[in-house]
Length: 132
Image (tube, rainbow, N blue to C red; front, side):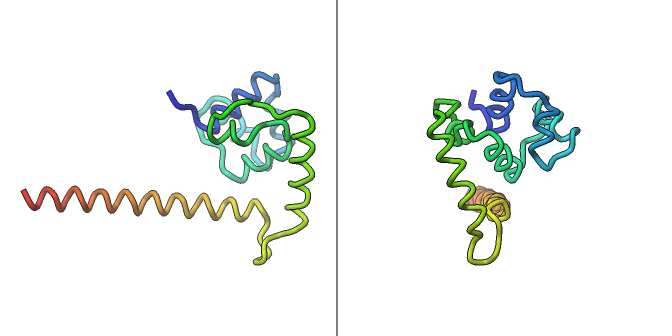
């Protein structure tokens, strides 16, 4: 069974004995929201994933999103990620949006695209039914 990014992040937290209270301190989410993540009741929103990746630079983004090992990066790789992340924060996009805002917009756009693709599939199915 394929795991989600939320499941993998929670797996990382539990393996590293990172408490919910520690996570609440580094993300802009309520204690209740973090508790829901730990119990896998809600998916972690993209901007919270970004905050988590910033707070835990050793967490491998490829593992989080695609399940590609290893779970953790080496210290050198994590340090490089932190440096790049800091540079990205300093250099906002041409439209004045932060990295987190861009990630949120991409997530919303992906949802819209998924809904449109579903509608197209439904229309194709209905067209096939009418032909019969």
